[in-house]
Length: 347
Image 1 (cartoon, rainbow, N blue to C red):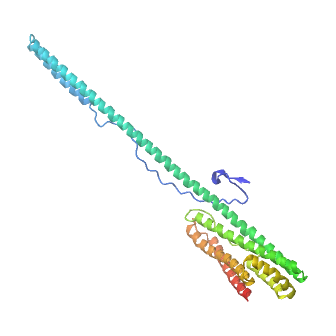
Image 2 (image 1 turned 120 degrees about the horizontal axis):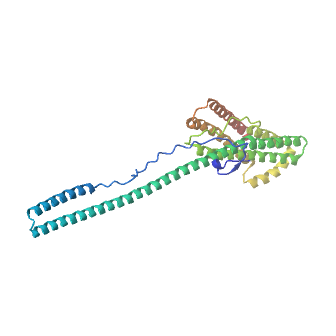
């Protein structure tokens, strides 16, 4: 067993069957966020202007004081006045300086709060951006895993399950022919019953392929990937229609023989009533229509995938296109053969 925990979430798968097809993860959109200033530069810078202004005023006052002292050495009142004026100017200058410093501090604090808020907003945006990118990547990885598993399942059904069911049905039909030749009435009809059960099983397996293929196409639609079309060219050793035609041929042998037909009439009545059909022809037609529907789906799916993968794949593959064309022609031939068989069965 093989584990790919990073790509497939730790799910255990068979390494011999694990295809390495990928869904391309698109490049994330560039993240756009608000610019964050590294530091705040105050709009007003009064310090130098205040210092220069204070120096000039102080110089003028000091000069005037000196001149007044020289001219009026004995005028005490003038000295007091000059001292008061000088003190008044210095108090005003100091208070103005302090007020401006407080304004700058408040401005810096307010701006620091703004920068912190912007940083928090950008951090939240980045976190949400990375979270969304991670969710997208994980979703694509899950889809990639699901598509790989669907591819494995469908290939297993088409390559193993359906051929096995058809082979077993063919074996029961051959045994029915042998028991018919030996006039073993009950065993003959039992073999035919087992054969039709295997044919019905093959039909259910075709229906499973139909359901899985729809999921496969839905997952890959619109994605860049290197997955192949789901239906590749297959050469079934036992054609489902040929097996069913052989079943009808062997059954006609018993129906045309009075002894076999008499035994079957009693068995048929019980089976038809249990199955909810009104008559054997009704049951026969229902079986034919069911198989016809399954093969019609295959033909339509091949045609649809031919166009979708040609449009969505990274590059065109001429070999693959040719294979799909051959597959489409194959199913058209099968449908034509089925219609002919259906008309023969009604007669």
